[in-house]
Amino acid sequence: MGYLGECLTQMEDYDEAERLLLDCHEGLTRAKNVAPGEIAAAAARLHKHYQARGMSKEAARWQSLAAR
Image (cartoon, rainbow, N blue to C red; front, side, top):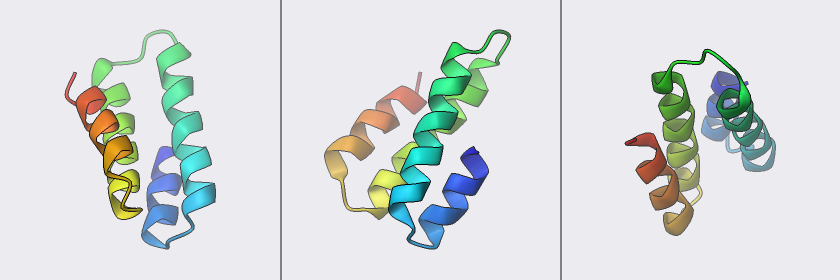
């Protein structure tokens, strides 16, 4: 879902991309045995998504989560 959301962001289908990216991040945070790097990568995709939309506050929030 995350990579599809990233592609949709590039295609400027922001609403569908956001839904997929958020679902992906949520699923990874709830799943067991997920490497922290995977969760950080999902947060980084959300950071890029919100950056592309010009939503700097949301982008900064996800950037800080990606850095963890």
